[in-house]
Amino acid sequence: MLADVIDYLTCPVCRADQALDGNVVRCARGHAFDVARQGYVSLLTGSGVPGTADTPAMVAARAAFLGAGHYAPLAARLRESASGGVVLDAGAGTGYYLAEVLRPDDAGIALDISKHALKRAGRAHPRIGAVVADVWRPLPVKDGCVDVLLNVFAPRNGPEFARVLRPGGTLVVVTPTPRHLAPLVGELGLLSVDESKARRVQEALGAHFAETGHLIEESDMRLDHRAVETVVGMGPSAWHTDPVALRREIVRFPDPMTVRMSCRISLFRKIA
Ligand SMILES: C[S@@+](CC[C@H](N)C(=O)[O-])C[C@H]1O[C@@H](n2cnc3c(N)ncnc32)[C@H](O)[C@@H]1O
Ligand SMILES: [Zn+2]
Image (cartoon, rainbow, N blue to C red; front, side, top):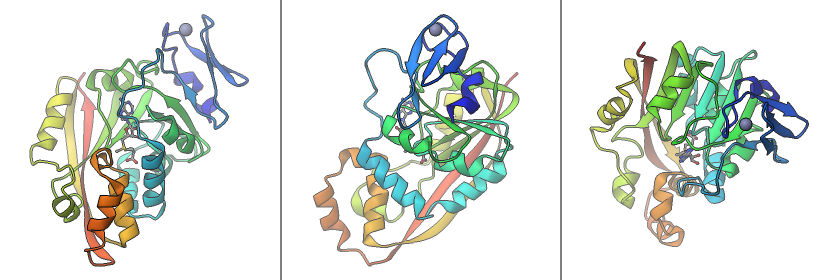
């Protein structure tokens, strides 16, 4: 709930501390933000929502696919990698991984630009507070209050991640490897990941973070046609794929078929 994380939030207008006043998040200077019926609050200022926000259809696909447990090995690995405390998930989506990582006394901030995703994230765990915000703008989060920052298949803002993370805190970044979703990527012409992705992530964070370790999480999933359609529908290729044409392609595949899940979990420490 927002009450669990309100102490860590700042006003996106004036950076003052926030307090929860009934169904309104209000800063010390009086800027007010309504809490939505579904429990999330938008701390986005201005009218523009970036075009990268997951759509309701993508969110529904993501919830169905993750709910079926196909990425459970990744969630379990993240739980081992994240030590707890105040956990911020930047680009949290439906809050699936954040909910898996939180321990009983932790607090979880689910931050995403998609309110459709956050409707679910706010309900994914009792100690998650869900906040609409743009990762590319100053995060509405206090300096140095975050113990673990999760970033799973989502955009990264190195300077802001460094600002909100406490000294000694951990940034956990998950990115797909070039083997992720083989053979679907080749067969369906989905957006692919090249070999230099991990290096580019490091370079983008390099001014503020040093990688302290990484591991590759890989497993084979048995997916029926419906699940294949769902995994395509929840990913970035959904922006470029016609669902009818996609279905026509998928019927050619074995049912079920083996699809690889392969991602890199990178752990970073803030450079002092
Ligand atoms: C591929 S999804 C991953 C979601 C979640 N981490 C997961 O793995 O289930 C990418 C997420 O980033 C969010 N996103 C895209 N652009 C964003 C931005 N500028 N600021 C915050 N979130 C953003 C999308 O709305 C979406 O929920
Ligand atoms: Zn304010």
